[in-house]
Amino acid sequence: AGMSELRTVAVLGATGSIGTSALDVIARHPQRLRAGVLAAGCNVEALVALCRLHRPDHAVIADESRFEALRDGLREAGLPTQPHAGARALEELAAGDACDTVVAAIVGAAGLDSTLAAARAGKRLLLANKESLVLAGELLTAVARAAGATLIPIDSEHNAIFQCLRDGRVDAGVRRVVLTASGGPFRGRKRADLAGVTPAQAVAHPKWSMGPKISVDSATLMNKGLEVIEAHHLFGLPDARIDVLVHPQSLVHSLVEFDDGSTLAQLGLPDMRTALAVGLGWPQRIASGVAGLDLLAHGRLDFEPPDPDTFPCLRLARQALLAGGTAPATLNAANEVAVSAFLQGRIGFLDIPALVADTLSALPAAAATSLDELRAADAAARRFAGSTLPFHGSASA
Ligand code: NAD
Ligand code: MG
Image 1 (cartoon, rainbow, N blue to C red):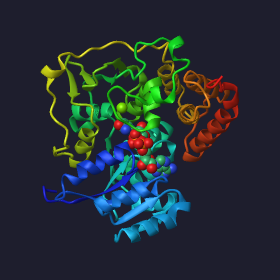
Image 2 (cartoon, rainbow, N blue to C red; image 1 turned 135 degrees about the horizontal axis):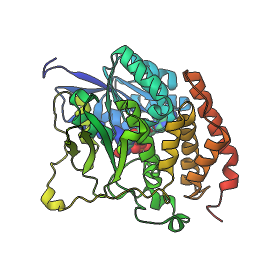
Image 3 (cartoon, rainbow, N blue to C red; image 1 turned 180 degrees about the horizontal axis):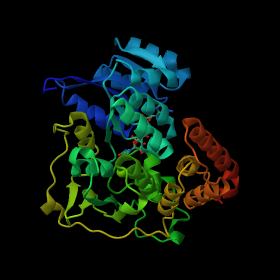
Image 4 (cartoon, rainbow, N blue to C red; image 1 turned 135 degrees about the vertical axis):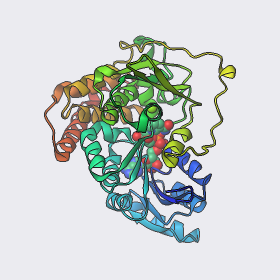
């Protein structure tokens, strides 16, 4: 495996924020990286536009009703790219010979099956889809281990920790990890200030440009809660050894503390292309298009504790992790329903933690060992959360 090895990459969620960042890095390295598969949810026009630029062998649209539109769009563009549609095609391409590397960048539990398929096939798996780890972390990491898949976290915090650890693994001598959090757009506000905030305010993240769902999660701090669960599965650490520190500049991406008193951190500008370049080039370092960090220009690094009263989602996520079994799946599904309802203007911002808390208490944690049990918990939580939505709907009142 030398410099000349050409990696063929499947970008699942190609039209999203992580997907386009991944394609930006891939395009910088035509000698070593090429896009073999591009997949998206339902936006055919955006997918065909990416196919013109990156000329993949295969393009997949998850929404089956859009197959003809994709086929015609690729034909009109004069591209040899083969069109596919549906979740099954997505899984088959993620697992098959069309790629050796998979960027799992679909948002939400919708990304679970293709992520699992790539892990089972032993691919190099660049995992941005944190919801799949929250929903089925034990299964996913076990499948990846058994198949010899290389799992590289593409979440800035976990990628930072991965970089600080030898071979990306926690071994004896690691005392704890510290996830940094920007605090989101409402850092410093109190509960009463948040009742009337709008979706546009919630997605206006001060430091990162991301898709709408994770932007809302950052505003509620549920994102950091999901990341505590993610860190637990990726690094095999208990909740008590995963700390969270608010760091508004978003330059220190996370830290690892060792038994000898050393703390290692990874720093850089807040741009996901760095984490993606780590995963695409690993174990080598390759250019990402991100400038180096000029600490003099930034001047200072600040740290503060999270505010658990204003942002209860972080505590809810830790409770779900401690409860175990189906609880994280329930938390994740209720949160997806709540965030989507908030983005549609159906519920208010404070209804998000309320809906998640109600769902967790209505559907107590049960042991779960199979994917079917986890899927059933996910479905039950979506049903319950959906049925209580009208009782939370205070947004336009
Ligand atoms: P996004 O909304 O910008 O993009 C989502 C992508 O998923 C789109 O390409 C969309 O077409 C595709 N998609 C949606 N539903 C689908 C379905 N049912 N089947 C197939 N494809 C589907 O989201 P994003 O910000 O790029 O985030 C993607 C994932 O990466 C999320 O899990 C998020 O938590 C994680 N992540 C993102 C960032 C970031 O900086 N954006 C950072 C860390 C982690
Ligand atoms: Mg993150």
